[in-house]
Image (cartoon, rainbow, N blue to C red; front, side):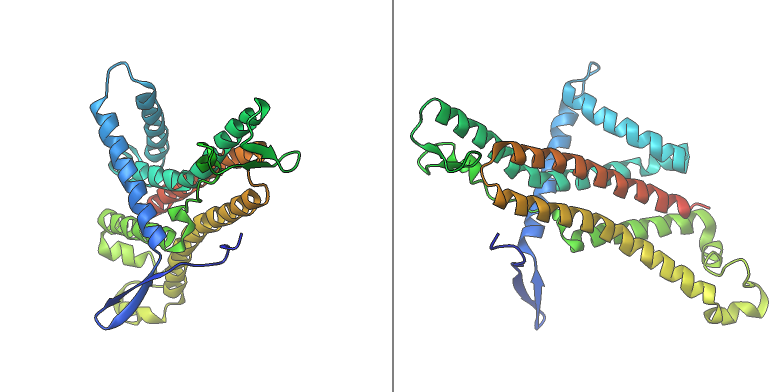
Length: 282
């Protein structure tokens, strides 16, 4: 609880300027990417005609995303963007879920400690009718005291970086689909003429600035929607976990709701990504 609100920033000096960065965000982002690469390598090596459980799970996710992407963008473009959509979904999902590990460890640690107490262990005592006190010498004490892990998606820099990446990809796609001329005309609105001398006073067109502002708003809302839900959920889990430290059932429920919220937010961000790309097709 004492660590809430404390932001641990590291500093680096480059070209005469001092830049601050969040070390935990960078480390956890690389850990998530390393896990995804490792999972891909292991799954790729064990692909069989008769799929294993892990292969079946990945096939289910890919088929689900393929159906949504193809139905929205068409078969040709949908299959082209499918690897990107799958990568975005898996990265956000694992980033959201990785913070659940401490609660899972604490849950099993609480189960082991409660079982040890029932069998007469002197290393475990109930300080109240629901709270456990475990002696540090017990081998399972590290499970209950497992440190918190921060989700990469809990930091706005990660979410905004993902949203800006989607913005660039979507508008690059729009330019390639419609041509640079038609793409720029789309910002003028149907009311404003785009021929003759009107071309040279485009900066007077109010629709131009409204459309640019709309694109910026989409990108910002795309990032802050994910950031707000994950950051808020993470704070609730940290606060409740601190208040009910070593309580078995509530900690298990926190892990369950973290799993549910994590997959919902990954799905929402991914579906919005497909929608933003589709908007540039017309």
